[in-house]
Image (cartoon, rainbow over the protein chains, first blue to last red):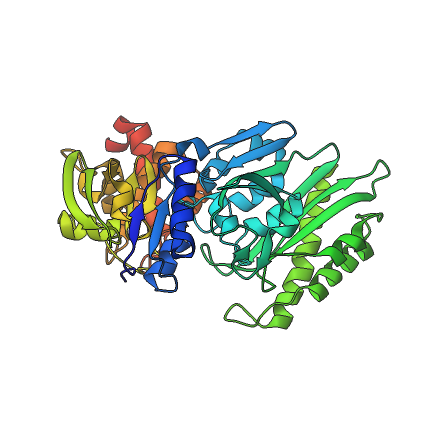
Length: 289
Length: 162
């Protein structure tokens, strides 16, 4: 399968890339890892007239711990998360996700920024970043701005980024003491989208109850979603109580809205979410202790 | 549609052509450079038959444009044997790691970077490492054994050839 025709540009600086976005606007797509975009172009689901390849922006290829957060540059590849000691030792939720995204060959090329900018509810990072309460940094012709993840995703494949803005960085707050996170995903096979997945990041109080919790769900809603009902069912409660876990699981299953497809019926997916939520919470609690 | 002059070092040889921006790297390798060892399987970023190594990392060449690889070093199955068979190729031969052989070039390219990164992988690490490469014949057991054979040979060249 051969993609449609397009003009290709390879800027060498962020400012040059933004100038190109300003010039080409809605006709242009940013090419980062390309692991969602190029398949969509081969199927002609996407037929952009202009591709702006940001692989040459090597100053966006970083992953570093700064001022209380993990800064992930737009050209940081998924494999870099897997190979990062900081991620593996301090960001367990992110580390869990990094090893179940697509497959190893795709992860060698795919970027974290692209996974988020694509705003696909079936992608793994949106739920992860919702659970982390991450911040997206975007740069456009009028300068840089930060977008809280809660207001980043606006619809299916739609985000708060304007056509003239480039996602340049994602910031994940460094988990504090007594914090833990986990990502639990059910997939039919490696490389397929999740049947469902649950991202949990929580903090325990001194008495062992849940002081704070954020939960994101993958591929069970028309856009990336937070399971605020499940969060409410946890906060202030003892997570070692099976009834508390079950209540959180039931809340998550009730508030998602999966579509029936070849991966299962809506009822099946809701039950998957109920079960995965309980597992993810349990794993996050173990890590927080 | 924009045209671009690309120069790609494939297996140590410089290749240079004017290509359409939309030309995929796998088509460039096969059709412009006549290196047909790199296979097209699914054409949908699923199967890994088109796996090549670009600047040290194994990627699916159906999911990269040729213009993106300009200036980079690409290694394909044709560049693996050096005089005799590479230990991974020998492993596939000795351990019956292939039946129809269609997935084999991709499997070998993936295994090559896997062993470069992790010279002594466990069976689970091998299975995980090749999880982006589909084989519809072998059931994978013989492929895993082929890679284990290669790892042993690379780590202890004398013991394995004795």
